[in-house]
Length: 306
Image 1: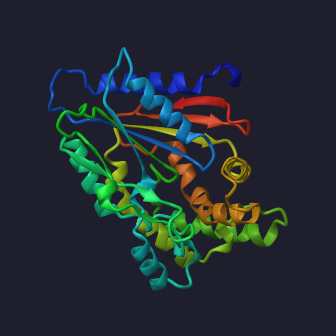
Image 2: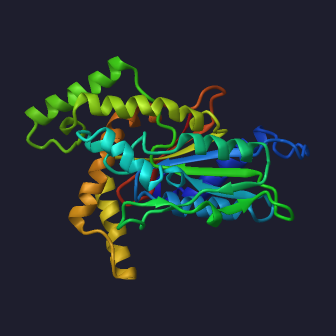
């Protein structure tokens, strides 16, 4: 199948509906847990557009499923807690700002997801990335949106999206091997484009150890869609395009240099954890992960169900 003939939204909605039916969400049991769908992809690949399309279609006939969308970004640490984390690790560049595993409030995430799973009235956290001159902070709880409240449509599908959603931690041997290979490439290859080789082993180990706790999120997923950049380096150009559009439309946004620094802060994790994600992040039964290989033009080049 040629990439031009692959409809990203239709491919994904067909997969999601198939998985929902397999989970028997239409069994008629009002107490059945909602269906949890994860969507992973690098910055700029089109997660937000895809999530919006899927949520919109699920809410319409013939499905008419109550759907709520969350981002892993909604669970970032508060500004105060992020400053505390950075101060505790002053020599670790990976945790001086939000983004990497360790910079999310996993207790909050577990609490919100458990409440949604139990179909209880739930307040959905929100994060303001513009607060504190772009350092960001959690929106006050009084401003969080409530779902599953009296008179509201019950939530049947929970969509959780994020750049690191579905990443699984590596064992020490694999972590060290990835890092050693990156260091050798940095020293020997004048064209080295990665970022892992510019970080200390103890710093990437800290992120990897933190990622182990993220299983509390990944293990809740009934299905996962992975928007897989054919070359992760595309993230730089895609993010530059996004920010240029923001500057045109809003009159403000990051400079190109700021975008590069921003992406570089995330990139070591793409180098470490993408290979395992491509092989499949979810446990049995198989078939619950859909991998869409995305070309530089953001068109689908290949579809793989794992």
